[in-house]
Image (cartoon, rainbow, N blue to C red; front, side):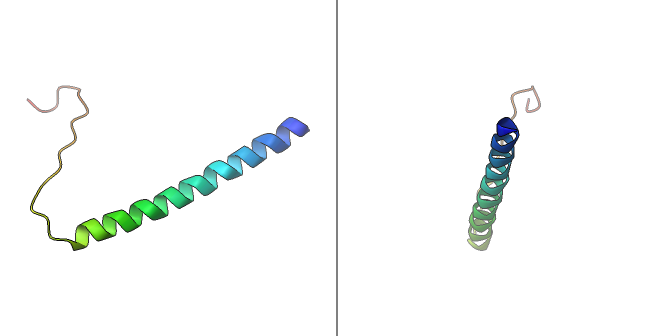
Length: 51
């Protein structure tokens, strides 16, 4: 029973941390989209897609 409580607490902590990080990412993307920036960022996964 003690292990179940620990797993539940860690699961809740994980969900709360995802929520906080997603809110921060939304704020950053909002400020980046409001500033006019002509640069484009390209992310290559390294699987031979950009040749």
